[in-house]
Amino acid sequence: MIGVQDQQVEELLRDAIHQMPLTKEAQLVSITKQVEPKDPVLFFAAAARLNKERCFWTSTKDSFSIVGVGNIFEISANQDRFQYTETTWKKLLGDVRIYNPFQAPGTGLVSLGGLDFDPQKPRTELWADFPRVKFTVPEYMLTKNMDDVYFTINLKIRRDDHPIQLMKAIEAAERILFQASKEQHGTPRLVNSKVIAPEQWKQTVQKAKQEIQQKQMDKIVLARELRLQFNKQVNISHILGDLIKKQSNSYVFAFEQNNSCFVGATPERLVKVDKQELLSTCLAGTAPRGKTEVEDQQIADNLLHDQKNREEHDFVVQMIKQGLNKYCTDVHIPDTPVVYPLKNLQHLYTPVTGRLKDGYTIFNVVKELHPTPALGGVPRDLSMTFIRDYERLDRGWYGAPVGWLDSNDHGEFAVAIRSALIQEDEASLFAGCGIVKDSNPEEEFEETRIKFSPMLTVLGGQA
Ligand SMILES: C=C(O[C@H]1C=CC=C(C(=O)O)[C@@H]1O)C(=O)O
Ligand SMILES: [Mg+2]
Image 1 (tube, rainbow, N blue to C red):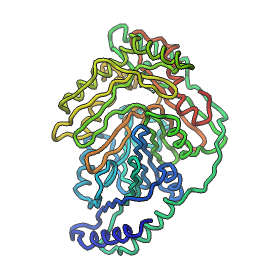
Image 2 (image 1 turned 60 degrees about the vertical axis):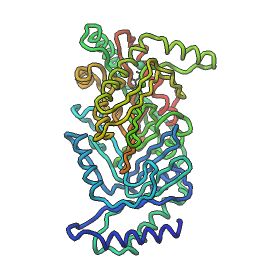
Image 3 (image 1 turned 45 degrees about the vertical axis):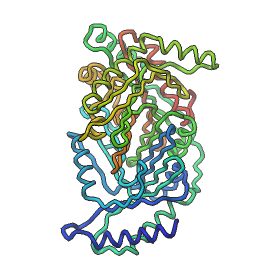
């Protein structure tokens, strides 16, 4: 690696050891340095050789990536999940020594993670590997912001540690992480695919529609599962590489947990914060892509003027507007949506901007907005109860916020849709859709079928 910087790292470690308060047994130290360009997917692939849990985040639109390896600090909670996560994160920030001369987002101390869609829904075996909430501060982290690449080392030091010994361990890990990975797994073959309970799902849509028509609720989002079997273990780095190539305008993410990995390419930003500048997105209302440019334009025009889809979308806009007004000033939301094209489908999209009021953080906004009516419904409580009672699916982390935040008040969370839980040679894909009074169960079934495509095609299936 870059030699001069390594001498600096050693000096920083020496200082940190000498200056450790007597009251402390151990101290978390975080050191960020700039490194030569490195492909985040190759870094993720190479990290497999360290046998530590990995996490991955790329915003394909912004050319921004974070790859985390290992886990030096973990926040997991079952109750008061937002409050506890925020309090623990703030406490950690007050406790850690950070050497980060860069202001780039995603450098310095960063925590990455996600949580359950519904903390009240009983868990099944499917998600047994995943805690209900988990945020991780990785041991090693690569951050790529446009053409600049940074490497962060997070370690716990003790008073009797020796900087030269610590450096040896760091350099050994760096050699592995920055070397090209030679593993060639070949692409696994999809040998079986099972649509879970299609007819029951359509009946549940019908039931949701009835409740809406009887004015119990306005909107309920219902999801379903597609279960795949392969002839051998799925290679997560290949999947991530393919998703990045194919899914522009998306967040490509992966969170490993024991033998499971939750992977996706979601177009739906929940909230992005850069100091006090805030961005959010209303995304709901869906149509397929056309086979020709003319057909595509025709479908987009129809989508923009389709009452049922506009209704689905407007519920999201109203709720996000209301939610953000509590925590932001200068909330700006255009009156009409535009069409947001993706590889396999197109959505109605309304961008939102605002300024976070003093004293509030990204956690307040995530807590307020989740679940938006793009994943839950309207009103929130009744639709969540309906989903809990009638949807035959353990959503786990599907449909919930996943993302990251750093020690310099940057952070971003996306809604984990277009996603799959991969478990060695098996995978569960998830897709949902907004049911409103004019929904048709067959059409909603078809809409969810298309929503499986981003994950299905990179896993060797047919869209
Ligand atoms: C719930 C999903 O999509 C949501 C986001 C965009 C459009 C949606 C829709 O048109 O129904 C859904 O609300 C999913 O992809 O699993
Ligand atoms: Mg829809």
